[in-house]
Image 1 (cartoon, rainbow, N blue to C red):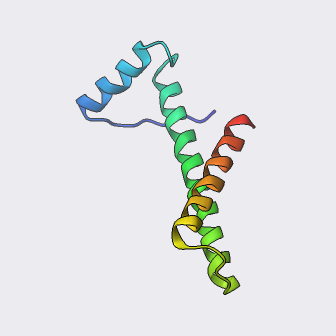
Image 2 (cartoon, rainbow, N blue to C red):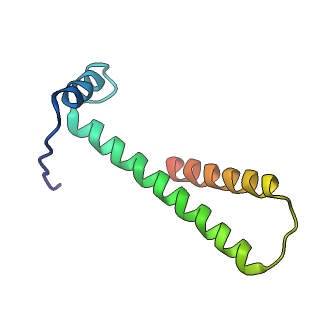
Length: 87
């Protein structure tokens, strides 16, 4: 595993230490790894959502209204995140 040094303002450092103190994380590295994993999941969900939008625009067909399309895309994004979590 690679090592990375990160500089944080005092308030952020205290926040990280407080999160570790809850017992949910073993140390500050565990907390930062969890943040990075969550950010990766959000980025993947955004990418899938954008792919769906691009495919919809390229299809030229509109079978649902804007709200229905947005809800469908949100559902698919949530499913992708949940699938990633269970993997």
